[in-house]
Length: 593
Image (cartoon, rainbow, N blue to C red; front, side):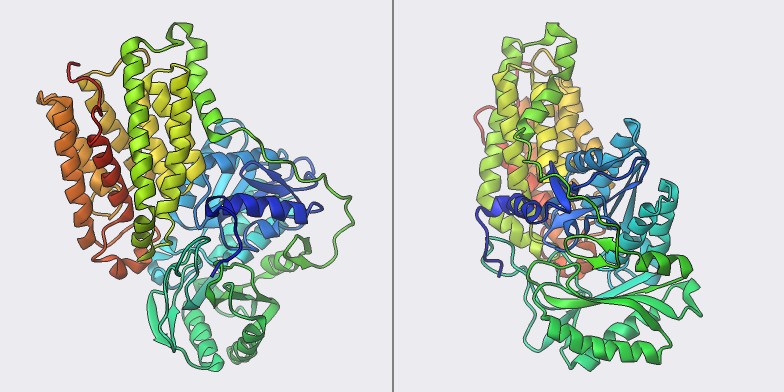
């Protein structure tokens, strides 16, 4: 049970404040995360780790000389937004480019990828690399689909050491790729973890059993087995990893080893297990090099552990052994550095302020569109009312959405949707108060939703709202064809960004039938309200029918069988929002358009 928190919604923000205050010699807080207290030398590659919080010491605990230059920190088990990633990158970069390192999860891939493209477009070279070390999450012939778990620690360490030596961006990326290709991890869970403010763990394991092949976001194991002795568990872990050894590891006798605790397994237990592991490695002809036994990549208070092996060559061994000095990991001796500045106070600029400022940019260039006309102002007000309805239903259903998500995911969908819609509504209200047109109101809402919510859903909802805003007119109420085009553009934006198709068990399964039906009926001459209501009914049915599907994308994919019988939380929340908006007195503007 996670017991110490103030407002659960601000758990991560409060953690960052305390973390930076506790380690001013290593880190300073910036919007979106932390960076090194002392700026890196000019020309150095900035290596940034990142992901949701709840994994300490990963990811922010390894920021410092010899290791990461900064960490992008999302909410608990939620990938940080592209806006957060970009903010941290701009604070950390020193002229040598940026490398984002993270686990292979859809939200992280999406948001860090967006940030990297934006940075590169602004003249800051940036690359991303997703770690894929978890052998339980996909077979050996599908390594690109594997999750990143504790093996990411080794990848982060070697890539960071290469950057510390002065390697250029392309070489640092090569080291990350090479380390990942030689890294394998297998983990087990004895019991689930509880989100701050949660009343129950995300999953439980029956007494005397263990979950084999856990995820680090509160996901249960992909299978169950009997909980035996430490010797028996060591044999399961070592045998599993050796059976999946890299193709180029034949004859390699030296390995980096991480025996990682997930948050509630005592160090003494890990050392008992390590004694058995090291004997089995010796029997296999493998020599551990600077092994690490302890908590390095946790999952809040999950009871469990994982074993990571990285088959080393001369380069990787040098980088693995290289010194580092961070809040949570120290190795060897580094030159004495002067104390860095005290951690900055987080910016008071809200997501709403930033989103409205971005939405106003076209208006500042064209003063003729400075304020909305009467009809456009009414349409903008409809958009605000729709977001209020979305806020109400998402807060009402937050706990139920979290339970749906916890069946095969990390249980954070309800919380993330609430955080996103709250930010979107604040931005929309601010834009409407400044008499911006519907296009700018929706664009501001989309930017704020994506920036504050993070995760896959945050990025997709942000993209959908921005796409709606891009199609709608800037100075008047939308017409019938513009509404039809806007619905289809929102669908295109979501599928282009996320790569999902109908049948993948995502929100696309509800969005596609809604957008298609709404546009078709508008173009056939149906009144707007009638077209919207009937399309919403189709979305609700489609969302319910996702219960029969097996997920093919996202965090639920490794636990696809568990998901059968449960509707997709993303499709369910979308259908709930569409229904709430349909029940408003006026939802889509005048039918006279």
